[in-house]
Image (spheres, one colour):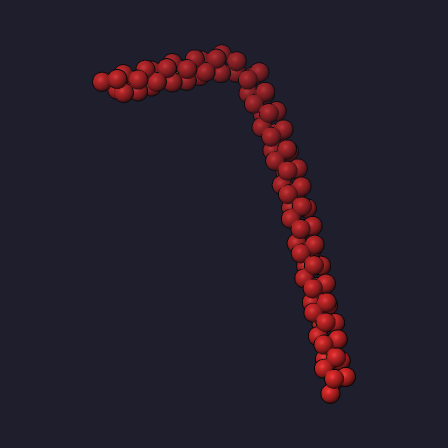
Length: 91
């Protein structure tokens, strides 16, 4: 009887150890997949940023006066909006 209980405990420990090993393996695989996905996303973002930088540089070189005018207009608009908000807040 005691031998049977000890055998059952041993079997249960073996099963539990196997399940724990499987869980650890699954967690490791999930972490590895996450790291690979993050690296892939970072590479993609880097490529997109490089393309955006190159396109912006081409646009600025191709239309410098339009860019200056648009920047000036954006600055004036921002200044007017800030002034309007300050005036509204103080009233």
